[in-house]
Each structure stands twice: as structure tokens, then as C-alpha cells.
Length: 302
Ligand SMILES: NC(=O)c1ccc[n+]([C@@H]2O[C@H](COP(=O)([O-])OP(=O)(O)OC[C@H]3O[C@@H](n4cnc5c(N)ncnc54)[C@H](O)[C@@H]3O)[C@@H](O)[C@H]2O)c1
Image (cartoon, rainbow, N blue to C red; front, side):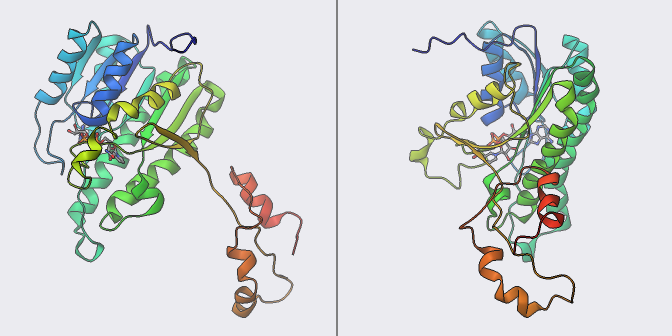
């Protein structure tokens, strides 16, 4: 058993969206079990984002209370993120942690993708995260403590058939989180992203049933809790997590080629330099816009 002191959230208020089931429920139970007051938000609709019901959030609130924890329900769509934050402030008086987890799927191959399926996925994942976090942000800046986790996906990082809408939204959240991390740094407001894998109603049709014991939502939540603890200094990170596997991702850049810019650069020169442009034998790992600009305008290597 670990000899480390337990990471606790006593006195802290955590908003978890989409917490009526799957990963969100598991996050909510873990935070509440470690002393946080939890706002369990869930619209209670279908996996496609149709309909609504109060029962999903209510069930998880009841579960938390039965275990001696403190929780309140919120039934708003994340598209009304301001209302969710207002409910947390009304019920608990502050907001320290925001886990933007609510999600839907509208999978469709690109040639059949409708405007409606594109917009619905954008609205829940991207617009919902923006409205929710924007409403919480001033409070977290003011108190010089805040932790934000957004929920990305391998479908965004790597691409996946039938998921142009979802992949766009999910990698969009990584760009969103990276700029949030830059803006929050000086105020001890940290932002990170997870790309989780877990058996849930969103994934049950894609994964064999036998995997449900290996890929439990409970295997993902400990990373979310750690990232949200006041002792955790990590910000701007993207993590793959699932089935007990935890790993940070980063960008890798090829050594690259500097072609003489005194004269027009011919496409043939690009073709000739291709092994250096696209080869990763001597790669670097840029981590900021400054790193990126440095390579473009800095000393010319070859
Ligand atoms: N399960 C995985 O393997 C996996 C992989 C990558 C990313 N994710 C992401 O993890 C998150 C959680 O998904 P899950 O797998 O637990 O699925 P889930 O369907 O069990 O949970 C999503 C929850 O979000 C709620 N929700 C949907 N739209 C909402 C809205 N507008 N406002 C408030 N609540 C809303 C749903 O009612 C549902 O309870 C999602 O963002 C999903 O895209 C999951």
C-alpha cells in the first residue's frame, strides 16, 4: 500500500459535466469520496444528444449522498454553461474544479455528414466547454486556484473513420486547453486534457463486451483527480488514459530543411529535401509558439 498522504479535496467545489453516467459519474464519485462538493451536471439525453431527463444526474447525486458525500444536481445542457456555474455558486458558494466531460456522438462518413450532425457535436463538445469554462474562469483567477480538465479523444489526435465532426471537436479542445494553460499560469489556474478509453454507452457498440472489465471508467478518473489537485503543477498537458495505462503525449518535429530563400523556392527543391522535411531521425519536441518561430526565423542549419 502507498505511504503517500491521500490527495483530498475538502472544501473544494468540483463541477463535472455529463456526470450522470460513464466517465463523468466515475469522476464525480471519486471527487466526492475525497471530500469535494460535487455539482453533478447531466442533460440526461440519448447518446446522440436527443431528449433530456433529470434522472441521470439525480441517480448519481443519490449515490454520492448514500456514500456520505456532498453533491447537487444540474440538468442544464453544457451549451448553457453559465447556468451550470451559477448553480454551483448558488449551492456551494465557489468553484475550484471544472471537468468538461459531457459528450455525444453523431458518427457518419464524411460524404454523408449533415450540417445538423456537424453542429450538434460542435455545440456540445466545443461551445459547451467554452461557455462552461468561461463562466468559471473569473472565479478561479480571482481566488488564484483553479483546475480545468477537458475531454479529448484518440479520434481527434489520430483521426477515425466516420468521426470528422467528433475528431474536429476533440482536437479543437486540445488547442483550447493549450491557450487556457498559457493564460491561467500566472494565476495558478491549470488546464489539461485527457484522451480516455473506457467502456461506456458511447463505446459499447464499438468495443467487444469482454473488454468491459479491463476498460472501466474508474481506471481513468484517478488521473483527472490528480490533475485537479492543488499540489499538481502540470498544465497544458494531453494524456492518454485507459485500462490502467497513463501516458503524456507531445509534438514531435522532424529536423527539417532550410531551403535557400534568396531565390524562389522550387517545388523540386522541396521534393529533394523530403527525407529531412518528413524524417524523424533527428527530431525535436517543440512545446510553444516561441519554439515553433525559433525554427523558422532562427539560425539556418541546412
Ligand atoms: N468512453 C470512451 O472510450 C471515450 C473515448 C474518448 C473520449 N470520450 C469522451 O468522454 C466523455 C464521456 O463519455 P462517456 O464515454 O462516459 O459516455 P456517456 O454517454 O456515458 O457520458 C456522456 C454524458 O454526457 C451527457 N451529456 C451529453 N450531452 C450533454 C449536454 N449537452 N449537457 C450536459 N450533459 C450532456 C450524457 O447525458 C451522458 O451522461 C465524452 O466527452 C466522450 O466524448 C470517451
